[in-house]
Each structure stands twice: as structure tokens, then as C-alpha cells.
Length: 212
Image (cartoon, rainbow, N blue to C red; front, side, top):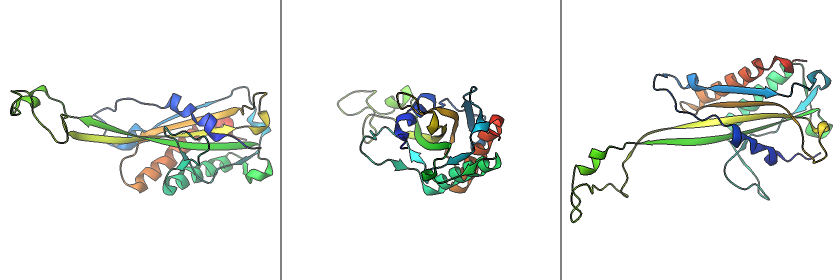
């Protein structure tokens, strides 16, 4: 059974956790957030096998119709998928090939956002009068904009546990469990990968109902 991953990946855009980060935070991992939710009417003891994709889809504002998706860096993709696999196995599930009719299909996607801060001071414009325009017409290449002084990248990972056998009359596949991981993408690649592993672990810690 073919599952349209892109139809439900748009859900990510509705639940991304965006906020202003506190200046008192000293380490990037202090800003990591893990949200989980599930279908309380489903008995997870009735399913036992699952399958995972080989890579993590990168969600952006592109139209997926008729186009192959982009994927996040393999280093981060492997860290996320390996940790999901370990937790699923530890919770009593068995991984099978997607061709072997798995009970559950886990879909994994991610998105990144670059946040820039600009220095803006009304006095800045008056430090020099642009010739012919009088005071207050300061100039800054490449246009009339103050310089960028700082910024950060944040990212979110969406994990959706779907149930192919529960497909509805409109060919909608039920999502039984959802995890959203949000945090900064700052630091070395090794530290980012380690934080991804920790937050994936936390999403399962928050979901004891998944245990077989």
C-alpha cells in the first residue's frame, strides 16, 4: 500500500513551536522542546511490527507534486532514524521491510529556519548626512538597511506513527502517535546529532503507552 507522505507532512507547519529565546540560556540544549500526542482510543498492544524510511525528508515551501523531495544531511538523518529504531525495538516492536505488510509505518520529516536580528537605532541614521539629502540620510551598502549583527538557526523534527490497516473511506491513514522536536541548530555537528538522539529518546520516555 502506497502512503502519501507529503499529504500529512504539512501538519508540521501547523504545530511548529516558535518563540523568543531567553537571554539567560547558556547552552543550546536548554532550548530543546519535545511534544508528543497520541490516539487514546487505540490499543497499541494489537500491533507489533513497523517499518522506517531510509532517510528523513526536509520540508520547505516547495510544491512536492511530481517532484522528488529533498532530504536532510545523512549524518543527522542516521542519528534520528537509528534512535527511533532502538526505542521501537526496546518497546517490544519488530522492524520489517516495507514490503512485508508492517502494522505501523513511521514517517519522519524535518525543517530548518534561519532567524536573523538587525541592529536598529534611530540615531544611527543621523551620524552622517548623505550629500544632497540633508541630515538623516545615512548610507549602508547594499541599501538603506542597518547591518545584521546576530542570528541563529532552529529546526524541528516531526515523527508520525501511521496505521495503514486503519485507512478510512477517504484514503486517509490514521496517525496514532506524533512527536515534535524543536531546538537550536547550533554547535558542532556531533553535538547536534547527540541532542537529536537525546530528544528522540525523550519523546519515547513521554510515551509509555507505546510499550508492548
